[in-house]
Image 1 (cartoon, one colour):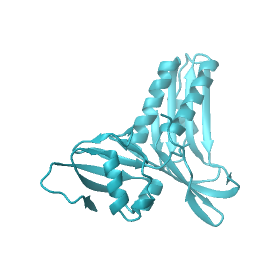
Image 2 (cartoon, chains in turn brown, red):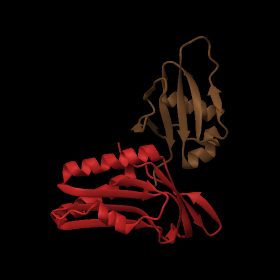
Image 3 (cartoon, rainbow over the protein chains, first blue to last red):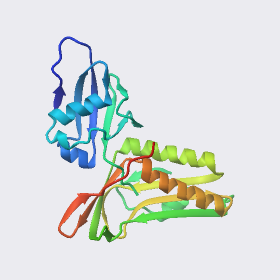
Image 4 (spheres, chains in turn yellow, blue):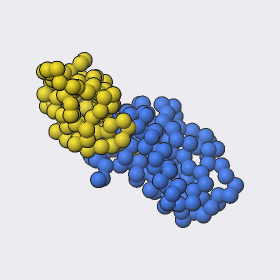
Length: 93
Length: 139
């Protein structure tokens, strides 16, 4: 699946999105690519998924997220090629 | 040893990985699948990990523990996949010269693992299955 905002000729960033556990089930996907208008944040990506993905509205507005394997806040900017991971609350152990 | 494994966790392998004759205190924590949760009878558990990030975070926890305590050997192993009741889901082993620091470091490692490592579990219980409500990292 490939989701895009309606884009003009403005600059964009393309990021990989990975979803796990309950979020993978909600969104019906484990991995997708998003194209976002620059400047883009994690929050913009979440907003787009909430709007366009199947059952996206079930995703929290501020889910736990990681970019390139590090926990980050949703305000974090996204750069070309980043890997954004949507992490349900952790339950290891 | 920092490891995610779909195979049964071997205590012998764990012990071998923390072998060190300068250590007199070896503390091991084992987490295993329990038969109840929030009043429900649990039958089994599925563990899912974000492998690359989980391994990165587990290594970071070991590194932080080594800064805080004089650790000679440390091992963290987490199971993935389908586990039956009583199967070991997580193992932490810390070897130090003395027991006090080994106990403290082992406690820190398992507590921090639960708060920062991206792993999830789905319970299978009487009449259904569901993801276990997890925790959000502090800060």
